[in-house]
Length: 168
Image: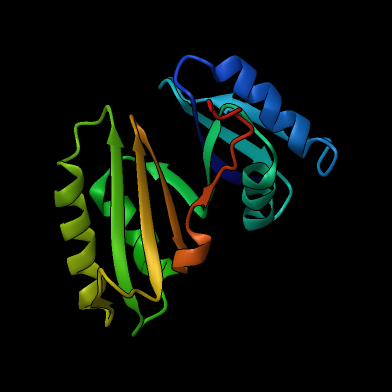
């Protein structure tokens, strides 16, 4: 199963889950959404390509979905496992930027995680370029699990369109 990390409006996870499934079930009738134990974070499990699923969710008119992040792999929240996945997914010689968000973990701060993983990737031949990277290594720490994704900048996070009515 492929996975997409979905950020939603905090406290509205039930309704957001319904919105996500309304969007995805016509494309993948076996898709499911699971909770992470952290408010505002859902994980979609689907047989669809992660980029296609994330793009479909973000492209739908949703009131509660904020973003959809394609996931390459979920690992335990341990620096060594995060480093291994990132190193196995990047193109050697590419310019990379590491981005980390941490929710409820005993790991170091997000900036420290970015530095540790960035050093490891520099050690295998990548160059750190925060302004113009070829690839973004996205690390989403969610308690005891971590979602890792390596994508070009334009495929790293899909921001949801909002169907909210603007006040005039």
